[in-house]
Each structure stands twice: as C-alpha cells, then as structure tokens.
Length: 84
Image (cartoon, rainbow, N blue to C red; front, side, top):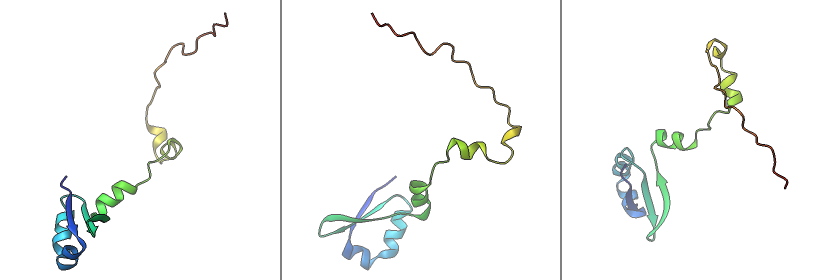
C-alpha cells in the first residue's frame, strides 16, 4: 500500500491523478502543509467502516443448523480460592 500526499492546490489541478493514486493506497490532501483530508477508494472505505457481525448474527444465518460443530472441552477452568 502506497500513501500519497498532495496539497489542496495539486488536488484541485489534478483530481483524476489523485483518484488514480487512491487505487494504490490512501491519498492525504494537505491544507497549508497539514493533513486535512484522505481520499480512498470505495472498497477501502467500506473495509474500514464495515461492522463486524456478532456471534448472535452469525448463529441466526440461514443454514447454520446444518453445520456440524462440536466445541472442544477445556477441562477444569476454575480453581478453588486459597483464603489462607
């Protein structure tokens, strides 16, 4: 992944070049030398913002009842408290 940095002026003069650069990685757009914006492809943005499914969502998926699964036994987890 390549991170490209362009000034606001460069971005305004060559937006298509910034879009091409975004296909290789994020494009940081600076304003007066300071990072102000980031240009990403929609795929990269969706990857960053996608919500991870909860276990309840995964178990509610259609066809999940057909999956064979046996949880491994962990043995004895808890130990008696030593109060001495």
